[in-house]
Every structure is written in C-alpha cells, then in structure tokens.
Image (cartoon, rainbow, N blue to C red; front, side, top):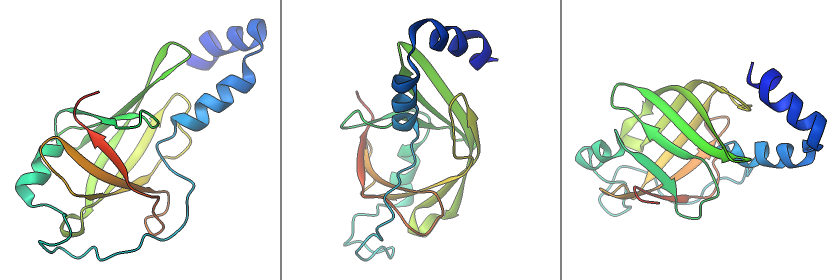
Amino acid sequence: MFTKIILKPIMKNLKLAPYLLLALLMFTVSSCDNEPLEGDFNNTTNNGNGTNIELSSLFDKWWYDSEDFTADIYFHSNGMYEQKVMLLGNEVISTGDWIWVNESERVMKIEDLGGSGQVATDIWFRFSDVQESSFNIEQSQNGTSYSVPRLYLDTE
C-alpha cells in the first residue's frame, strides 16, 4: 500500500528511483561485510561483554548509531523489535521479534522483520561492551559472519 500510494507517484513525477534505491540500501540494518570477526567472545570479565544487569539496559529505549549511518533501533522488553530511519523526509519503521540465541555470548536474533523497504526478514546481532548508555553491535545475515562493530548510544 505504501508503495502504491506514496512511492509510485513520487517515482513517476520526480524520477527519484536512484535516490530511493540508495536510501533503501542505507536503510537496511544488515551489513554485507562477511569478514569474520576476530577476538575472544567468551563470557569473561576481560572482554567487555557486560553482565545480565547491563543487558537489561538494552531494553525499552531508542538506540542511535553514533555515526548516524544505520537505522535507530528499539528492543522492547516484551520481545518486540523496532527500527526506524528517515527516508526522503518520511520516517520508515520496520518491526519484528527478538530472541536470545545465546545470551551468554550476547547473540540476539531478530525474526519476522518486516516493513516498507525491508529486505532481510531475519538478522542477528552480537553485542559487546554493553553499558547503561552505550553498546557495540555487530550484525549478520546468517548468524555466522558478522560485520565490524558499530557503536550505539541512547542519545542522538
């Protein structure tokens, strides 16, 4: 419906297809970087993975990419996930459900991700250095190859 009502007239009248494609590519939270991540990610006190108390700070607030490149993300404590991005002056929201795949290794899976322009239905996040107001997150489309870490903050 969004495509039929909003995007079709815009593309027809303003010839914005290249810009929409670029924005769509930037919108996806998933990274295409398939380099394996190096380092020890066992649950130890030396690698900054945090504690369960620190993990609770992930929930029920918006998180913003420190470089303002990827979507803003929100983990509801009830298992719902949201992400939003500004696209040509419009806020585009996608939603899904999150589950811990391996909480001790800080690996979360987002399932049934859907919304306007969303291309991946499942994505994986691996968290590190979780603090009350920040964390690092790596993203994967397959749960094995992760992107480089991105710093997220709870303020814009």
